[in-house]
Image (cartoon, rainbow, N blue to C red; front, side, top):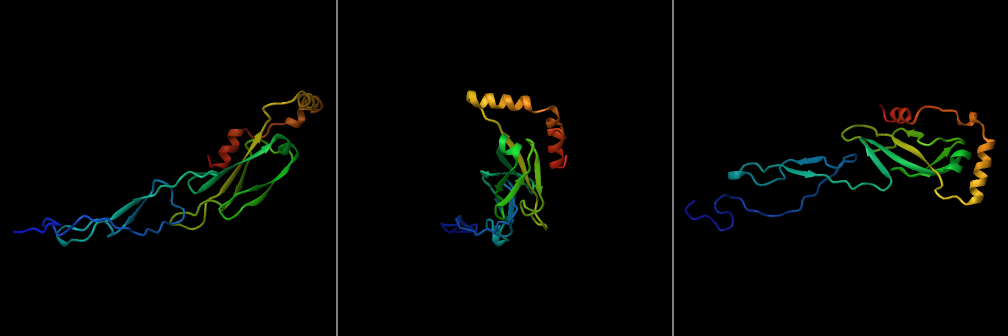
Length: 177
């Protein structure tokens, strides 16, 4: 080109910024990329435009931990609620639901709710929601509370503390290990 234009300097292309609307599919995870064919930079000498790659960033959630298509939720209950049984409300992607914990619920117990997790990317169905019971024990006791717990300890026999699956076996079973 004898006299290249000032804008493109004879390449037939110029730098510009533009906004592109991106449809993010349900179930995509942080760190994954989307390829938008033909939405990248202009091709050389009138060639086909390149592809635009968009890296997806998903901020951590306050309630859930993601494990593939499964969601893990920690449900805190007091030791009294675990011993006597209680009803709690668990948040879920499709709305909160009632969870009845029976008397004697153990720490680390996992309740699995099928198809209540993240939608499968490029597939059918959803992952699972796994609710892990976290039994909270009081950190500070008054002398009266301590005395009552000591009385309870003397009234409680060893048969009330029969071991079931170990904690690690429960976790392995719940998480497919």
